[in-house]
Length: 111
Length: 114
Picture 1 (spheres, chains in turn yellow, blue):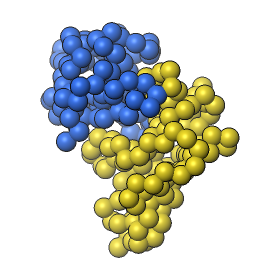
Picture 2 (tube, each protein chain N blue to C red):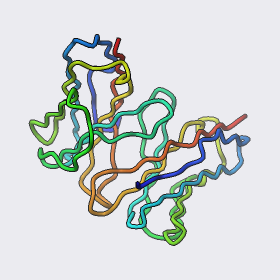
Picture 3 (cartoon, rainbow over the protein chains, first blue to last red):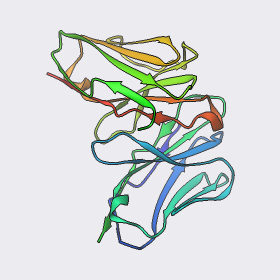
Picture 4 (cartoon, chains in turn yellow, green):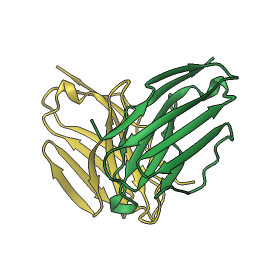
């Protein structure tokens, strides 16, 4: 069974710190990776996508991918209380439509 | 606003009712999806349509029936539901597969089955 694993948290970081969110996946054929943010009572919002090994930066967000280790992470620099949400990792094969989602990591940024 | 709208936003129904959820995307995407999100569980893919054709079979009870009349609209017809079907039902759309599979979600329909 293809699985995406995330620590459920909550991960608590102080305002201004770096939050590090991790995700592992079991399907070695996975080629595309996505991070979504979901506020309580809202729908998931796409914040980052990554397809190649290495780092991809977008503002305060950096996604990191290591296909050999089947590991993808999301770093949030200068964390703000407004970043408090659940972060969902999703992976997919190039040939399929299905995104396999993890259960998400709850992040709490404290003032 | 992601360009994907869903109605209704909230729905309460009895087990003998028939209701429908509606989704519309204004992004020009080719693929549309229905997901179920229950507490403490990952998002579950229910149905996928690409260019109005259903693709990727998933095990979904027959009391859920999808319909995709065109590439911008997707429906989920509900009948004889069970209380365990209470969940957030999310619609999403994407351009395609792989790197085109950035999926954008609608606001969801919160369904309660009594």
